[in-house]
Image (cartoon, rainbow, N blue to C red; front, side):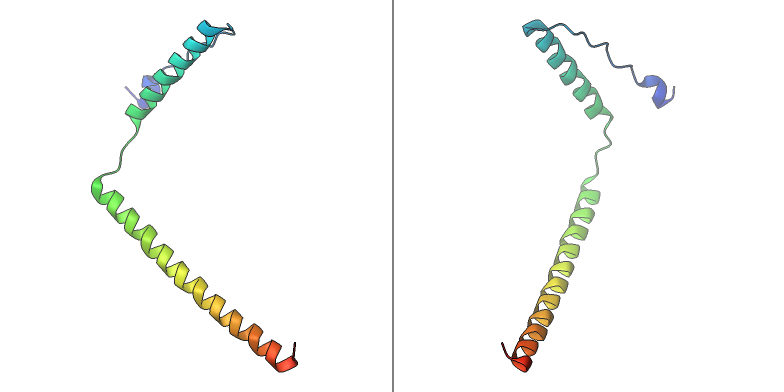
Length: 86
């Protein structure tokens, strides 16, 4: 059986108002969320570690890169202001 065949169609939503309509809607929502959560492929500990490491290293790289640009632009602007007087 393919995964498409396993997916059940969403229940027909009623337009009933009031407390009962709210309760049925909430119950349906919670059931759908639980069913979707069961279908999720959760990453392994190793995958989480690897992606976390990539995020940390990338953040450090771009932090240092932007700091370097900030220092360079600061020196250029200060040189221009000293050169032409302000």
